[in-house]
Image (cartoon, helix red, strand yellow):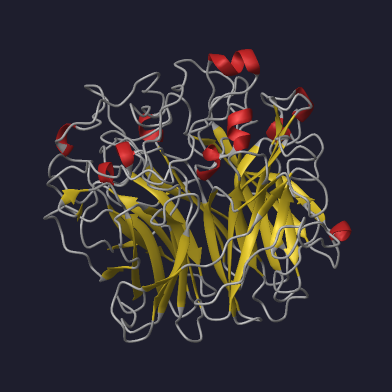
Length: 638
């Protein structure tokens, strides 16, 4: 989580933000569901204020899709506007992407490409009994206002998959009852998550949704018995429920009577299901999200606590929100700088939560927070332990416990995006926004917890105010860092064996060098971690070690590291070709904020990531468009 502000925030107490706080059988049936986010589709994401060159107070940043929302505009939180209808996805660089080492396991593209627009932020789940896989991702192919599709791969069929477009929720803002001043589908959705329910034998998918001309925002759930047919969420104004959430609507804010009250915005959700038959809450669905709140003026940041809601009826209705940021009123981990004085000692300036469920039904939630130090510079990961009950009022929360500090994501730890970006952190030779978002996993057998993330501690503090260079027609000279400066992002993992109370020191995951320093100037980034009940652990991440053409530390592949002790690692290259992320999105500005991996108890890995095919064209012209890829293999037989 990299969070920043500029002088405008110092004047108005709020500003735009930096990057978000945050082989097995080839006949396996794979179903991918891509619910579109019109997060700038393929249009130019106009730059906003760059990061400061001195340490200044930092705010939790909105997720990338949310920067199109009315909330982002009203609160001056990095508003980019809607580019869903923009067809300007041309301008890809020619050349590159050939050569290099072959992948150790096969991989396939999941999505079809009708108009060569980007896809990113994949998540994956699997029915372990059948091997049927469902994956989700942002998909900009339908354009604006919103769009999406399910991409279905049946057993024995070839890749990529067939396409189906699921329905979207109708959003109501302003007015009262079923009378709305504003009534329309969301202008943007995103942050997809998919999980298989063993009890229900169904697939669940969550995303955020929001409007552009009013302040409505919500978190939604879609349900499918087969990965082909999906339910439609209904907002509470059209289908009131006792908890006020509507049907398959986890939480919803309607902008009050005028529809223009942006004091609440619901952002960056994640999903978990209790899949242990002996658990007292077997089959329960849990969703966490960040609830951004402004003060009574409607323009000044107040807090962004992590909320949780649950469902016991297959996602049709959800409980009232439960604050899961911790029960310790004066938490020693959050006595640093607070953007709101009332937040001192309360860990409520948060973003990018991920929940997991233990076999006894306990829920653990990790999130990133920026209240550890004075002056505020770098972030920390915190974990809370949630004890569920039959009703929301019976829930109790322990923590928040410190998992690790510092995360080396400060204003001077990375270069800053150039023209076409949003003034956020990036890597040398790139222009995509970089987030220190984390993956979270649990060994369901013994309760051991794992957190994985990446940061640039090898070159910490070397980039105060430094920007990457401009884009050129040659990938070798695009977005270079100033002479003498390099990034060397590394992936780290920590673990807890006492219910999240204490954690090990960070261990290096990527094995391209023996230790963090001396640096080798090869970046690894956007990791996710998965664990099974047999003590096996895998970490998937994007990796720049393999290719030196056109220059070192430019093109990226994907690697999976496998271990049973966090000391000895076996690494597997899973990407068939290197990706030039300059061609992933307009101005190379976005590749998503996460990838994902699942590890089943038999040792099968299902890894999904965002990649860019070499020399991709549409109607003969180079384009800017990423795709979703999957690798399926077994760690025991490889």
